[in-house]
Length: 466
Ligand code: FES
Ligand SMILES: [Fe+2]
Picture 1: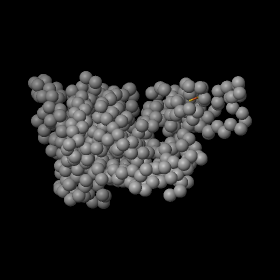
Picture 2: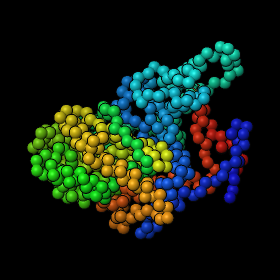
Picture 3: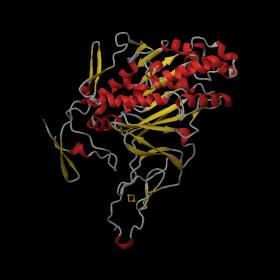
């Protein structure tokens, strides 16, 4: 085994090369399997933080959460805490939430308005752009002399880009631009957001947060799992049957009666897209009946703007897993945060469609609560499965998980490298794992790259002797 040596400051480190984690995804003709340890091994988790969450675009928040100068939220890129803030010039910065002095988290609030950030430990002060403005009691009682070389400020995440209000950041200065990274997911986001007459969404309420003892990839996979609904959510389906069928009231939960839900199940397509994005789209077969309802005028106007075909996608069911940590389903943004190989936090942010009738937004919120809320009948089922999934995978006597549903029938789409499968195909899960494999192989048998340092551009390991 080769060892690598590098200099960090005046300290020499020996780096042990990493195993080739890409071998945990076994892909060949008629075969797509994932090794158990990709979910259960803490060293795999540590490698994911480095090779995935520090290398690709990661969703950190939505512009409507920080509408004014001075507004901020705290968020994460993998396991690294960050502050997403709008400065006096309305510029958005993503700053590593770690004091340059001795490393305390500078901002402890989930969000709010500030004119500066004040570290709670020894009181160092930072501007909204992260610049170090003051070292408290700088000269007092010995303090720091004039030769003290103070860092410039909080580490600024080098790449920040937005798409239609969604803010993404990357520690990788060379990451490709956001829109080509999103690929087909861009059209998917457009279809969801165009349901607002103004083309905008607003995250107006606090998120519903769940922490589960299981791997983050269960959530990434599940939000685009067209196979599980009638099984995992049997209780919800029975409830719809009992109350909905007898009262005729199904709320605005798309899918309606159990019969309609079953019919919808095998309609539409599941996509395996480039860069790890998995999508499910189920266009409405028939749109005319929408125009007779309470929200007929609003929906007809959208239909006339976008045309029949596009409107049938917009009004249908759309769910997406945008690699690695963002999901869109129903009228919600879902973000999952990896904490450990067996611990994940999920935040569900319901959104409002700007310009849509109040009663429509309200109805979507109610139906959202009914399935996804804390007392909802659906989301708890999924979380229960994630916990069971982790428990089951601890049975390490069995090596592989099978992700081959639809493998032989997924077909290439003209003009792209994306693959389109049937609605219950595991194509979206294969999207996640093939990008996982690509990024994780980057670490194989190489010396590791350094974590971002407070000076930003300086990568100490590049100066090492190879
Ligand atoms: S750790 Fe922030 S001021 Fe000391
Ligand atoms: Fe589910």
